Image (cartoon, rainbow, N blue to C red; front, side, top):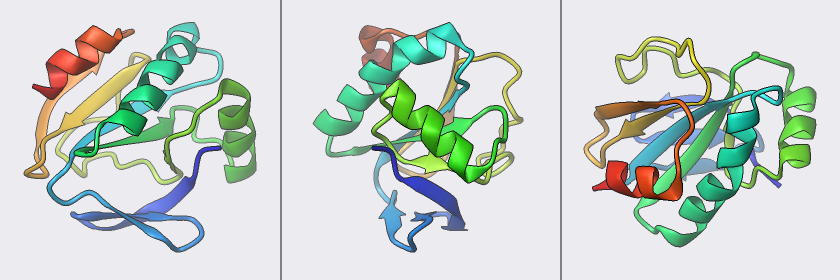
Length: 133
């Protein structure tokens, strides 16, 4: 089941709602915007889960596009099989990027903590692998 991240402490840590931080320093971060009603978002979940489990230098986090309450987001994430952590507070502007207007959208943040690219629309495992290069 996905952890829910309640906010951001600093540029190098994301805080999980239970108080445990996730270190992102020196790692590539994929920030995936999703919604339960978005069919391509649901199709990406297994790919993102797999990436999160198989890449030690990668952190995958999700942002619910609809800004729903924690309990609803957690329930939807469980239904969709999301296993990566979820941000409750949208990181809009944290990496100098506006809130996406199209779903799914994934921000690629480099190991240096800077925005590298934005992937708009459904992505395959190959698309994500290419973006990580």
